[in-house]
Length: 311
Image 1 (cartoon, rainbow, N blue to C red):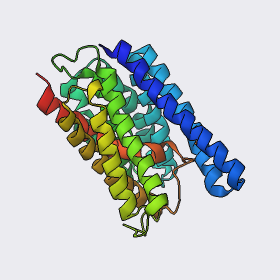
Image 2: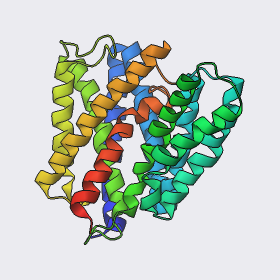
Image 3: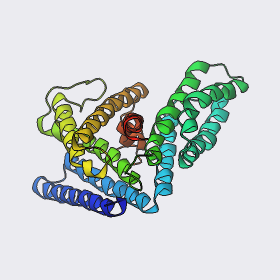
């Protein structure tokens, strides 16, 4: 069995889950009327239909489709980050370099599978280039803070996100032609963890973990969501190069990274005085609200897989 036969089975299962969620929302609305919670649930489900459709379309197009999809997601995420970051006229050159040179070049390097460069391009060369470009404009007001914020934006919105399509470049013996399924495993487990933490929190949540950062995150939601997503990851071992127990461990690692990534991104939002990064995705907020957990999980998942399973 290869990705060509496994992918339709996987997406059929996802579609079945979404059909159940759609029917549940419809039944709840008929039973309790249009409450804010039910409308939010239905909006989230509709957005998931769109997101799953986009990912399925990218899979049909193959490696190029997946790379372009995540490059566009990085562009939207970086735009949201910069929109909420104070900038000055002196930052315009550095911003142009970030959006129209660094971002496409990072994904091009991933596309040609140049690991030796795309693994250090942003954290080494771009980190040195950006302050040079900013300094050439001669604006010294909050210089360090302005440069550091743009560097951080590139790290989380471009460098970390690009590790999702970079999974396609890993030479894993016996897994040839099935790398798209590894991308699906990472995205599904991390996103399912977010949803399951939300559901468990709504059902049983009592004790808040970090109310100043994210009032909706509870101990019960965290434990239930992480445990459920880890079990889901173990059940999806058949689309990975991992044994079932290895898939469970990898799922546990990425869901924990996703959880703490969500907390970090919430801290940034609170610092900016906003609830969501944007309004791009109905019911979810902005692109960064949907990607925050993937951002922290992707590089760790990539390097664990590369270290233990590649030649």
